[in-house]
Amino acid sequence: MVRFTRAELEAFRDEEVPDLLGPPDGPSLRLLFVGINPGLWTAAVKTHFSHPGNRFYPALYRAGITTYELSRTDGVRDADREHLIERGVGITNLVRRATVRASELSRDELQAGGARLLELVAQRRPRVVAIAGITAYRDAFGERTAAAGRQPDRIGGPFGDSALWVVPNPSGLNAHETVDSLAAAYRAAAAEAGVV
Image (cartoon, rainbow, N blue to C red; front, side, top):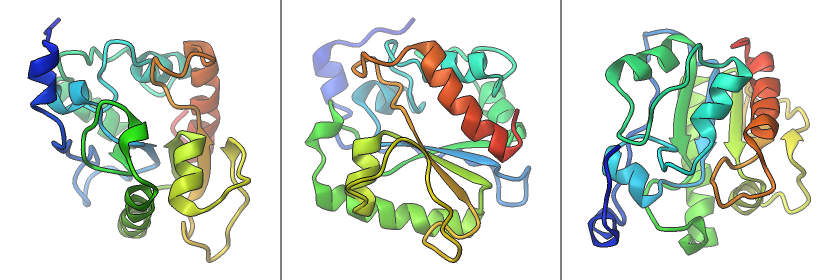
């Protein structure tokens, strides 16, 4: 496993991680996971949710979304990216810039990220959008009373034909979630997307 010093990681502050979406004419995007923003480790290895303490990839495997657990701390391999794309899974973030913690983001940044996400969803038309983090969702979209889980249908609403789920954040800082509880939430969204 690659290791970074704190100073080495700090050099990646404000860097961006490209979306994992696949080509527009490739396999259809069925399930789009949306993180809050990249952490510094993620920015360093250019792989979403890659910090060693993050439970995203173990939860994907346990949920049946991937057929094997992707090794991510050194950055996923091209074959792993292809596996996700072939399964119809994409990954993006509300805010593109890397920070140590999501709490460093302003509400304005999250709202601008929400607007960018709506544009992306309109272009790529995933079956399901799964936003990882209830507080970020509330801030980005002004839904102060939203609860985790499947959001009400919005016929003609901002997400168009895409179903919207708010799922738990897989960060190791989210201590009240486990790989099993994350997997259950992710599997529910993936089932609606037709991934599992």
